[in-house]
Image (cartoon, rainbow over all chains, first blue to last red; front, side, top):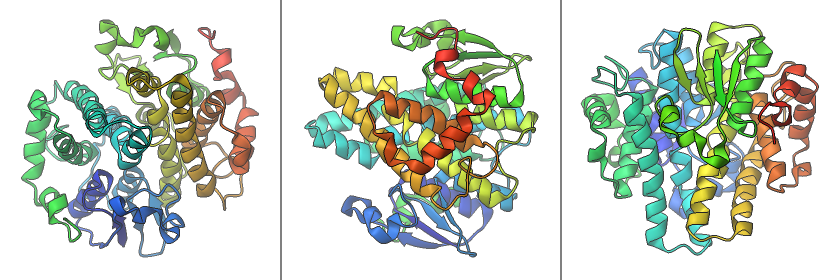
Length: 210
Length: 210
């Protein structure tokens, strides 16, 4: 497999964790988002959104959207599972993941922040926008797992919730968010970071890290 | 079941279509988003994001995030299926749905547009922001189904892709997007709108329509 990504992309980071948890190797192809490499025609031909990640399977299939890629990996390589078996628990885990992957990350991604700059907003308002999006999402997620026992977001093993949480907390810190406001999330993050699959997927451990 | 929603919310619209396709009844509880009713403490207690929809099951379980709700409905009421059986096709359908549900809709939702106004942007720039988000997402989706045979987004039956597409096109038109640029999407929309489950879920058919 080939994973098209970028060291700091939190959506790529989610897929790297999933591949590591499943014990799957992949060739990592870096596209420098700040240099606009994701908008090169050759890349747009496989990912018309001009976003990372994109996964190319060994059979040449092209998969886009991090959560769709992760659900696919979980379906064809079921062990270890990244979703609980019980439908209601699956829905809770997916809702947590989507609170970050739908309502938080896309509102603070590079494309949106670039658009805010184009509209003339000064850099400090752009950063505050990104911090606001992170605070909104993380505060909701803290509540969503308020009654969970841990150590991971939803129980004794990592799920797609943890795959979304760890990269999002990294973003939040980068934008200056005081993450101490989310103690349940920090506990889940600590549990995840102790797992080699998560540690090896961290941005600063990637070949294209700066 | 009880569905907390709003007639014009495209995420609520997706779930209404799913319920109709599955032949499931639900009591509809309207929360007027423009009046801020989604931020009432009683509602935040069941949906800490202050977003619609929320589904309450007959057993009192609380489900949030439209795609998580729809995947749950599809798991516990498998007929008619809203995802293909083949894992790769499922991934394609989910990626299309998420291109809209993650990268398009949240960037143009009420909360984000309100924030832009707070930052002092004039109304025409706020509308252009929403139109831009829709154009970006719809153009990518047009490419994602370029080689599909139709009549629906992915074949002979509606999937979660169609459940996301129809409400998103309604948003796009509301923000003045020239949707004629997306002929494949319009064909899939026409196929969907001919299905009673889609027609009955339309915003102007809801009791809280204005």
